[in-house]
Amino acid sequence: MIHVIRKDGESIENLFRRFNTKLRNSGNLYLVKGKKYFKKKITRNAQKKSAIHRTRVKNYYEFLVKSGQYDETSSQRSRR
Image (cartoon, rainbow, N blue to C red; front, side, top):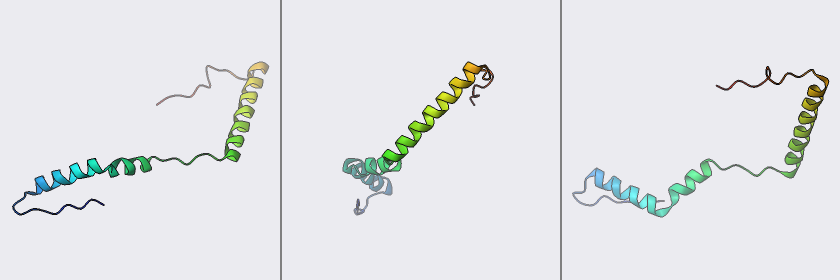
């Protein structure tokens, strides 16, 4: 934790500036920002499940295209 004490006759702006420089130099800000967007690693079981799902969906769409039931132009997702 960063601790800054106000000196005699020091303005709030200078105190705040000293605090910000200590914060930047300490590296704590980068650690906090890094933890904010941290994602857990996917487990092996979840990886296998998602791989199986992807292959099933891919095979299903290939079947629809081969059988003529799938129209690629009409089913594209619209982007916002």
